[in-house]
Length: 413
Ligand SMILES: *[C@@H]1O[C@H](CO)[C@@H](O)[C@H](O)[C@H]1NC(C)=O
Ligand SMILES: *[C@@H]1O[C@H](CO)[C@@H](O)[C@H](O)[C@H]1NC(C)=O
Ligand SMILES: *[C@@H]1O[C@H](CO)[C@@H](O)[C@H](O)[C@H]1NC(C)=O
Ligand SMILES: *[C@@H]1O[C@H](CO)[C@@H](O)[C@H](O)[C@H]1NC(C)=O
Ligand SMILES: *[C@@H]1O[C@H](CO)[C@@H](O)[C@H](O)[C@H]1NC(C)=O
Ligand SMILES: *[C@@H]1O[C@H](CO)[C@@H](O)[C@H](O)[C@H]1NC(C)=O
Ligand SMILES: *[C@@H]1O[C@H](CO)[C@@H](O)[C@H](O)[C@H]1NC(C)=O
Image (spheres, rainbow, N blue to C red):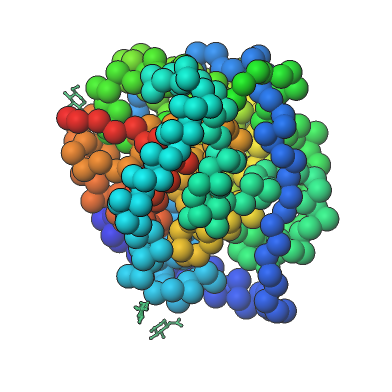
């Protein structure tokens, strides 16, 4: 059933791709130049941006595998513009370095921390600026070689001047095939206020962030309070955090990342900023729907029923994840090949806007059900059909943890 569905998707993908290739002549290879954004670390968060209680309702999740169409591209092998390497070789880049070396590196970092701040304890989540993501580059060559702090995270109207550059690639890495007029409509929309990630008023110290995935490892974790103690809490897709879920995953939400089929927050806190991921053409149309405050799905989504209104995304709190950011993650961290999951997007957005990043409910721990909100145990093998490379992302979280970029939440059964 699922196989047939994904096969059908793949076929329609291929048709789309052929169409794309027919419709657009490739005029040459254009080197991607990273777009620049303000150095967010100079801005500081505003307390009023911090979320209010969000009222998420439990629901079996729409998985990332519901991502149709173009997302199957990477799996389709030679169809993809990014498939520089063949499957099977993709994990090499992430081969963990010598463990001893890691431990030594870790010790150096820890000693440095102790010297710089005697009061730092493992228990505090509040970063003390002793070690920030940015300064990690000093210690980790692996991280330094990949992390591009100036990569533009979100789209804005300046991108209209850059559409030609963006149109060398298809979604989600570019806007090839999208109409200029649609992009105008979106980026110049009255409701597209594109709020800054950090508010204007200065919060002293560093920005600590909790990125909450949907991993079953959170079920029964009692990590909710710890999660909520961070300055910012990131959530994604089916982000159930009310009722019985709150004690395991917390209830605050600062940032919420979604794509059309994954969104389901029945009620947002007023201050939640929504990060929107555009993976496929109709996601662009859908952005316009959100901005218009229309019923989201009429005639747009091939998957969602007409008239489905699955959430209350406030158009004025919408931000669009920049195609260049997808490309950057794919190229630097996913072997130039695989699409980041929405969860992965969140981790990387956090790495770019926070000083201290803790990651919860990631890592696909096989001992737990796929999602923390599953009503019945779902095996992870089901997740392996997604058009992303889950195994690779899993290794990536461990690697980022080893390098000290994130702290990955782990637990015993
Ligand atoms: C969203 O969640 C509610 C329950 O919380 C459920 O009734 C609804 O079907 C869900 N919608 C989608 C699109 O998943
Ligand atoms: C994809 O690659 C395989 C072998 O690498 C080849 O046989 C096949 O014709 C290719 N398909 C397309 C559409 O290029
Ligand atoms: C994998 O990489 C090795 C060299 O690193 C190469 O010899 C081999 O052909 C590659 N395999 C595939 C399937 O591309
Ligand atoms: C902006 O969004 C609101 C809903 O929040 C909607 O009622 C209004 O029509 C939108 N404005 C425009 C210009 O589309
Ligand atoms: C939006 O959808 C609801 C049903 O979900 C319907 O009653 C309403 O008329 C629709 N509004 C518009 C503007 O399409
Ligand atoms: C959904 O709505 C659009 C526009 O309102 C319409 O063109 C399309 O036929 C509808 N699709 C279905 C399956 O009802
Ligand atoms: C979640 O944890 C509870 C115990 O804490 C357990 O009874 C339940 O089966 C778990 N849910 C899943 C889907 O594994």
